[in-house]
Image (cartoon, rainbow, N blue to C red; front, side, top):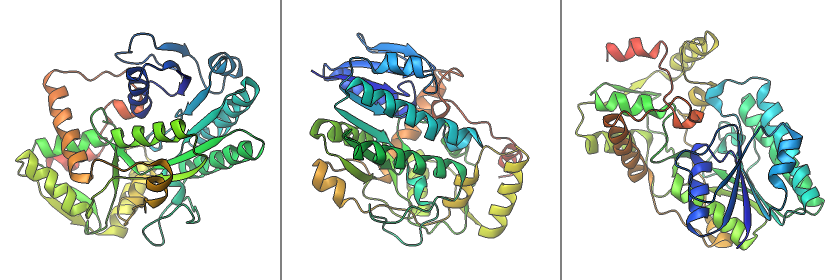
Length: 343
């Protein structure tokens, strides 16, 4: 039974990983600014920031496997803080892990390192070309992990596509709420782009496989099957029995308007969202399937419908908690609220 540290263990992905590890009987410690909601018995929490070297060293002490999930995400609009936390924080955790004699380091990265894909499917050998601060900070964090690997720390980098599933709110709360009210669902462009998600359970399974097998390397992971954004949103709408429909918008105009609203802080959508969601974006999964003996159990439609059903159940019981991590609490609609009322 290994001892695991999960940084960002109170977040959407981190908390699911903590529960999965605890369910297997592993010893689990969390480093986060927040406590873990519904924390499993025996899980230890170190409250602290990945930028606090002393707290990080305390958290890493005696640990065999580090799962580094802590990061600022696009919706936070963190600007220069993306590099400080996502890159600098990763370096601090890596340094502490090396000094503590950690056996294996699993780094959760992001598909945002690829920016706007020139072609799909994306493979592990596709050159990353991030287009905004979040993606750039995460790519530099990957480079720090690879540097640590060259110095002898066994590491895996896992790049998930957009993660959804029960427990995920953030900007998806807006989608689910609009569908529940029968509003028009606007997409940037015509919605005929093939856009892949990944269910949080499939991501957790990939992270566990990398740690269990000590499979160093870089892995792209996503869900299967998936269709176009229009097709998959339409399937969720039909599942919901909603009067909503998917509505196309002119791509260049929509991006320009959302960019202006973003700069004025009048929209919850950051540059990554309005730059990438209009494009085809999907991974080729053979590397993870072969080396990790992993395969996704969920495609886009099942992931979206499960997420939607969870949202309805949580709304009925009034369970929103503003103290939760950014992906686990609702995003504010901003000026999109005005669009909602005419939709």
